[in-house]
Length: 175
Image 1 (cartoon, rainbow, N blue to C red):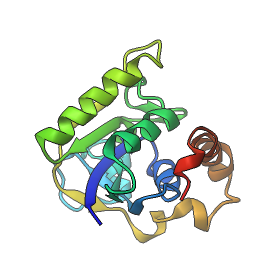
Image 2 (cartoon, rainbow, N blue to C red):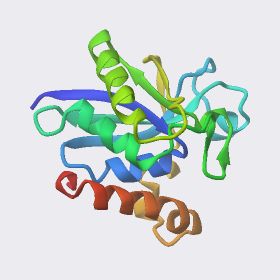
Image 3 (cartoon, one colour):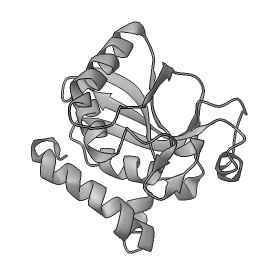
């Protein structure tokens, strides 16, 4: 096994986590916060917009099963990377589209992926690409939210369609 890690933010972390928990080769997907200045932020802190943190998902994957560029193909398919600080009705800097990378090799793969996917969008991709800093896991009640609350309204209206989009566009990646 060749374990790798990537940290992605594409709006509400519940959405991103729900998708990646279903991807073949993903070992773990943990909702959390990153990219801000405040250590050990809480959900309430992050929602205030004052921390600078984004809602993210810390993804560990087996590079022998799925490559980073494939992880990014899914990322660009299941969220809108052209809206600054917003995904649907979720608005604020905590909902920004962001990819945190660990080294220059990852940065190059990310930049190439953005260039590849730009053709899929009429508007410019505004996904932030930044070096990986400290990652803070979100509170326990945020983890595996969709699977634990599938009938909740937000899950039905916002998360389920993103999960369906993933399953329709990437059936071979279903884990």
